[in-house]
Amino acid sequence: MPVATAGLALQPRIDPDARDKILSAMYKIKVTSPTTDDNIAIAICAGVFGLTAMLLVFAWCNYNYRPIRAKNLTWTTLIYLSTVLWFLGNIPSNGHVRIVGAWSNCKLWIIWFRVFFCYVFATMCIVRFYALDRVFNQKKPFTVWSSLISGGAVIILNVTYCLVNQLISGSLTIEYVPSLEVCNVTQAFRIAALTFMWIIWAAVGVLFFRLRNIQSTFNEFYESIAIFAVIIGLLIESSITNLYYIYYILEKRRRIQKTVVDMAAANLVIWLFIGYPVFMCIFRREKYEQQWLEKLAQDSPNHAFNNNNITNNGTSYAKMNDNFESTFYNDQRLGSMDMSTLDYNNGHHPFSNNSHPLNIESALNGEPIFDGNALPSAMRNNLHIQRPEMNPPVMFATAGYMGPNSNGRHVI
Image (cartoon, rainbow, N blue to C red; front, top):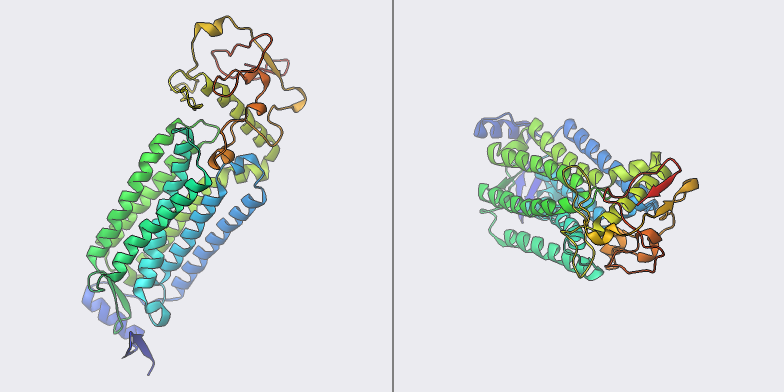
């Protein structure tokens, strides 16, 4: 008779039908061993992850496309890899395979794949949004060292939590029951894991709130709201499933539902990060980039004269009011200046080269947010960048960076 291994002991492998009957009688539910439906669900989920991988490959192949370059592809890719390993842990953890052989190492798959990489996914999202908060709200660079320190903190925090659970007795956390081919997960472990996850995403929510001041060019605040809504929905679903339907892995419909929901949420987050600029790169490449750069130019002078946010140490982003108009510096000194225009005829754009004044990617790598030399001369009287000689001095209109006039010239 085939045998199942539990440590050094050998146990007779139970017949699947007999197992289903025993567990159904024990827990008063309809227990179903893994079937073809589980394999189909795994294949579909793997296909979606493959599609997201293609999205990332395309983004890397078009890294020089500026709307894509502003999305911090390195961290987004690492977040994606954490979701793949999280999904791998879900396969045995959610009961899609018979828990025998290599699959019977319950602590490995549940703690070090499912829980660990689910936490890595969450904490790396924190780091990604912290980088934006540091650059745009704290006015500090997110350097290579900042990235390494943040990544190290993510690993240490999650490894410590999982290592503690690994060392605790299986009777208090997770243990394998070879006679029934199941991983027994205690309620205390479920509650602790879910509580830690809620704490992590509460921290993400704080960062999301702080990102509301980022200019519309980068659209991070609206993306953050969507991502936060997806994750909160996932947390609610996970909490209900793990605390109310505690034997869900034995029920075919519920375990498939849980795996598919986790997969959909994880992939949707990646698509929310970079899907839109990739889509625009495919279908409206040049036009969208030009619009993106024009909006970048529109944001640039606005923040330079934000009375509330200007500091002596750097340049801040302007916070838009309820009418989506900039809060400009209303100073009498500006009233004596003359108007100046920028020529955009023949499709020319001041940031048509590879350098533009608001370079997110450069800022995240420790370089200044602004490149004063990339600014049009009419926009170079930001005191926190430089004070070029101008003849005559220019005046920024209180209405902000305006659209083109009938003669095709943009007016500041």
